[in-house]
Image 1 (cartoon, helix red, strand yellow):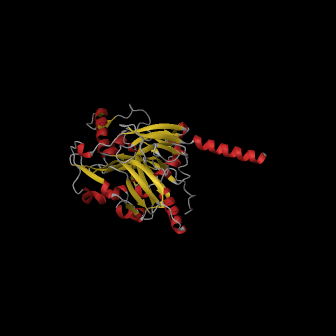
Image 2 (image 1 turned 135 degrees about the vertical axis):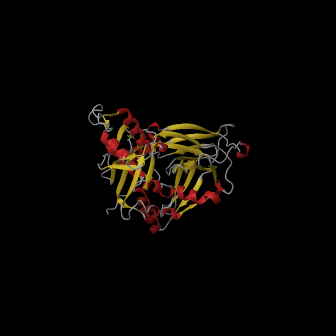
Image 3 (image 1 turned 30 degrees about the vertical axis):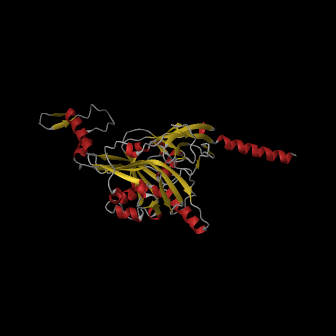
Length: 414
């Protein structure tokens, strides 16, 4: 009897634990209040998803720790997104989807480009999927759903899709369904930004070698990535994980203008007619010294000054709460990942600025000077508040994207 009792108790505890990590809900049409069958419900940037039944009901089990965007989408309706945290579970929600307005009924000031895919298709693929070796094994399954608008006044190209973009990534072994919300490329600033809600579906294979190749490629995509960096930052293990972070000061024409303005306020002519800058009123440690002014004004229009001092994680990050770290820094940061060399494809595209057989180098900065919230799984908010360039600017595309529930194997020693 004792054995039977223990087995029963084990099953009870297991079922209770699952229930505690479950999100349930019902999806209805906002206009008719009728249940929607076969609506997709998933945690963005994960492999966790399901569809509604005939009554519009769904259940998402195994909700991982952290904060996730829950996305509900269905053809003919506008997508619905809400953010839910692990601590809120178990939870039951009701979701009302609004019918998508027929595009013929919209008043469009800026029409879609005629023959847009012929004009911008390859540009879209290169910037959205990427040009890495992994991108060569990716195939966009529904390119006709992507349409383009080019604003000549803003000099910005935008892409739109009325249904999820489907990508077969045979390099990593995923079918990726991407609910695209924003795709913008500014030709003037050369800043590219895209945002959306991806769902990962594992490809199946009975071939061990292919499965192993997928695992190897996933690990290669992960190590040195922005996800790897954020996870390491959250745990305050940047140096242990192979990341070297340094402060990077960018002196531009704007800095020269600022320096010139302050210089004019503090400068005076001495008895010999020479211009003198008074440093004594600033106090010890102020960066706006006469030496700094002379250095800035003597430099070309744009210049990078790298401060050769390694920054530990706790110098740029702090605890917001037990689940969230805050990332904040001034100027720019240079990030070197020591355990990965520059890929050949990246070298070919950046021969003037990148050396062969060197470690990959990226840069990040906060254009709005807002704190970035970083979670343990490597996700961060808001993505628009941080701009990356260098290696990450080239690497972080759909072809190299991994779900936030991905768990890498131990890194192979070099």
